[in-house]
Length: 144
Image 1 (cartoon, rainbow, N blue to C red):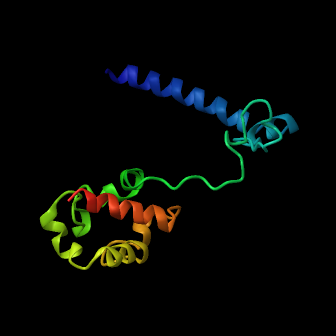
Image 2 (cartoon, rainbow, N blue to C red):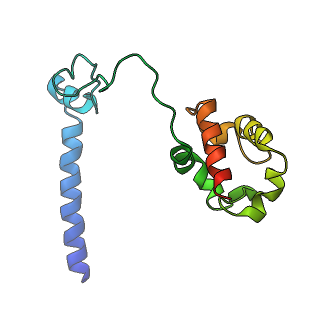
């Protein structure tokens, strides 16, 4: 690009930017409102009535069924027990699980609930019930 083209382009850019500076200096109430308006909106459930069904399909008040071991494993445990991350025994690898299985199922469940070595309590699944954690342990044990 020639020097003349670069200078011409720089001049056009400067002129465009200077126009923006004048708009930003507009102190009229309308201009101030436009520059300081909220970026997003907050909606309440009442605002969404008729647009989004805010009630669950089965709102009987009964607790939901616990998730299966496979569902909990897939959503939470597989990151480590599917890859061996942080020394976790890989699901289905009997050799890696041998020393853990020797401690007994109850100990494995306790470790899963309370944490053990690099594994955080509940495998970092903050919304898993004790039953769901137990289901996940049983799912992994059934695979070996």
